[in-house]
Length: 314
Image (tube, rainbow, N blue to C red; front, side, top):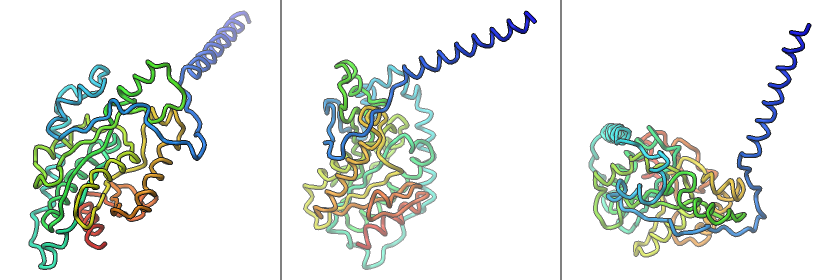
């Protein structure tokens, strides 16, 4: 009898300890802020750490623009990068050689500037980025053959978990509703008027350390700025994306709809202005709920087909 009471007592102590630990962990876990009012203005906590890199500067600059290296978030060697390059080159080679153009195709895009803007979020890691990079490379070549001026860029963030921007916010006492809490990173793989996409620059797109978060609203604004100076009659912003905008640090501090609402505001402003064409390709994801004119792709070949259909049938 005494032994049974001891066992019951031990069991009760264990239950109490577990309950106490659950309460402690719950209190320590960061709580997501609620959404603000519909008319809440979008803002960035700071733009101090936002950066634009050329493709060639990516490997050396990643250590400088974020604390990821110190936190162990960067790859310790290039093995994963080389594997991605092999995957992407295999996908590209399977597309085959470019065939001859029909007579009407040779100069059909001679008055078009096309900015291919690639979502480089963490969800693209592995095979998705390998076939997207292959398809974007071939699409840029095909658009160029048809006379278009083409640029290829990527958008991501400079660091996981907010990077230096969130660190600054923490150091300054975590003021509430801070706005965007990550540092933006845009990468120029093929600037306008630079000729074809350089193979070495293209390989930088496959660096696993580039793939972090995605702030699509501001990416669209940046893409529009890149196209403003173009003199071509058609200015086309063609986005390749696999989902909605996500940055955990920003969403935790501002509410779950904060980034999506801004994206919709930017998208609608672009469509209303009618100064350029906004098109999108979903990378194994249906993007029609985000973009009015879009197609979906599941591999490099369908990405090329989707891009050509979007650009040449307008």
